[in-house]
Length: 104
Image 1: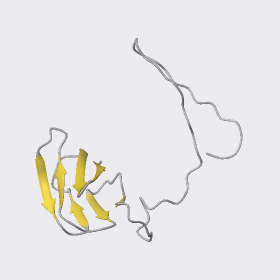
Image 2: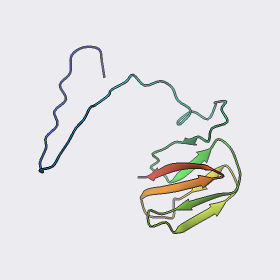
Image 3: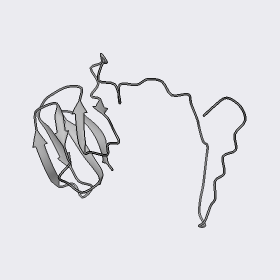
Image 4: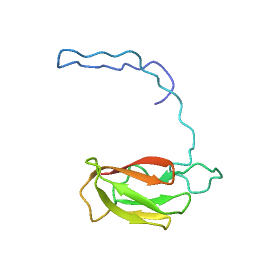
């Protein structure tokens, strides 16, 4: 967004909707889309991804699960290739870390 006043309109089309708060912050260049970072935390980039190929900041034995909890892919390299799987959200587990992968 450019500087200045903006209008955000939220249309509620169903009953039972509760919006507690909305926080909008200035984004910074994060490691999510930048492979040149230094952190021990697992990073996945680019995420979301239109091609289904994700790069990981570290390697190790990982598993990818669908939302039903079924294992769909395993590996140990720094690339997770979901290009042959349906678009959607997947869960990546590497050691004790868990990340969402969004293949669009």
